[in-house]
Image (cartoon, rainbow, N blue to C red; front, side):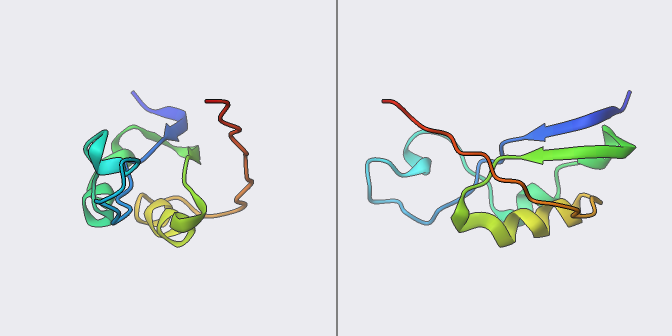
Length: 85
């Protein structure tokens, strides 16, 4: 089975291990190399659209990851998540 929409929220590494807000303190993260090895192409239809969460510090990595998974970048529209807590 393949899907037309691939929606991902990669567990990016931020390199900040000291802060209480460090991602590694709350969940397991993956290196870019590990993320690239995820077999997304096995579940993505040939004409699938990729929607990926990333922060401004990972823009280049997000592009590299999408291309590694076989996607062609057409646009990178931004969404703002306003956290209220």
